Image 1 (spheres, helix red, strand yellow):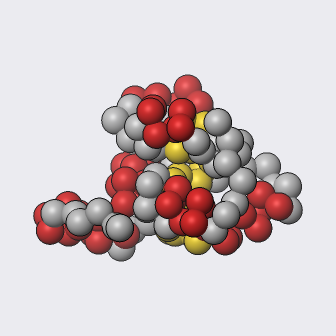
Image 2 (cartoon, helix red, strand yellow):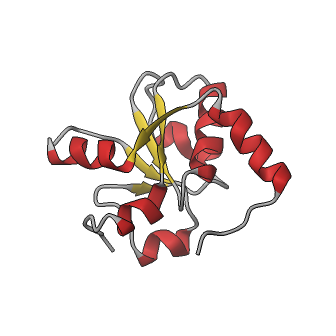
Length: 124
């Protein structure tokens, strides 16, 4: 059952979506299968990441990503794919990274929920 989000939260998500590029879970899986060199960042909570994550993803939770991104991705032109539980936290984080000057940020719509529902591989 999908979580019911508060209207004001959904409003800021929709506002961010107007500025952020998104891709689907299937797009991400295809790129992984093609063995593209990707920077995939999981912005969920540490406990969520520890329970399972997309193979190859690194963890920078939404609460710290703005503080720590430059030590992980110094090049503001490098492509960064962000995901969360369903695609809302990642779009908010992507919007902030763009405000910090990152030019090639993509939020993965569907997030972890879409990944696992599709039966794709999981790392722990």
